[in-house]
Length: 61
Image 1 (spheres, rainbow, N blue to C red):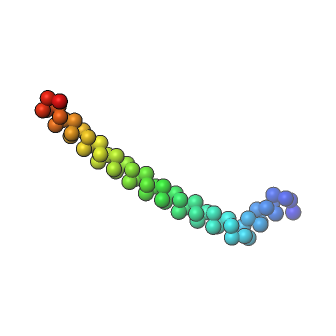
Image 2: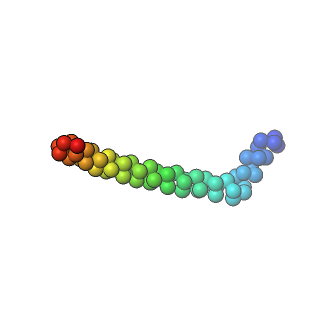
Image 3: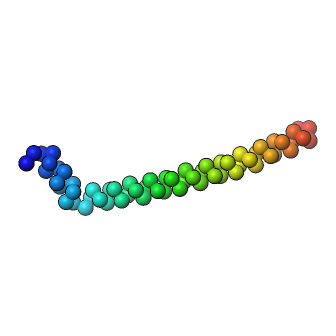
């Protein structure tokens, strides 16, 4: 058996591989949630600052 196949077999038999995949999936889900939250907060705050700027300009500032 070649060295590469032994490494693949060891990787599949041990529990480190599936655990690493589970952690990667959880990390991806968390990152997607964080990115969505940042986008939502950014859009809301952008609208807030835009309205503030419009009001200030309307009053001569």
